[in-house]
Image 1: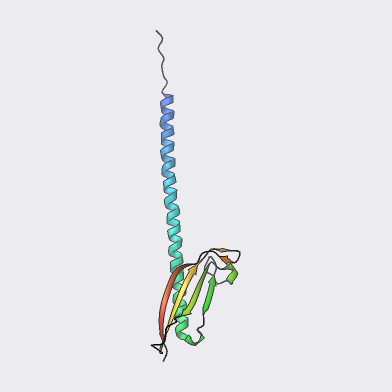
Image 2: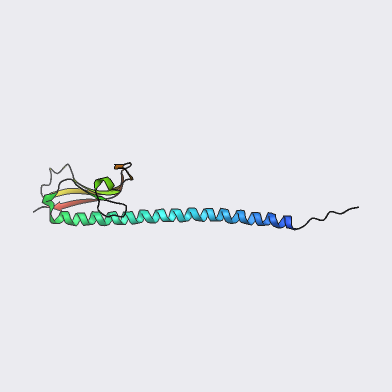
Length: 138
């Protein structure tokens, strides 16, 4: 009777393939977490920068409220001021409509928006931050 001896290399290859599969699935999950972390970091950076720009505009308006018309300031992807055609973010200052009750207060809304810019057209207007002001006029 002839005995067939199996080599252990077949079992080793199966174990090696399972280990590679396990590590590749784990690496895929870790990459997803890194991408999500990067996106959250970018959103936090944009929120902070929008808050800073709105606060800066509020300080300007408190000093010179007479020059208040509908103001728009445009920013590129690095939050540097730019032209309207190159904008990624923009700040808008608008007055509240109902000011009949209190003549000595001006109500103002400062809002910062984002929108992807593709050849001069903003696709989706998304508000990042807004600041409501009531400015006393003596």
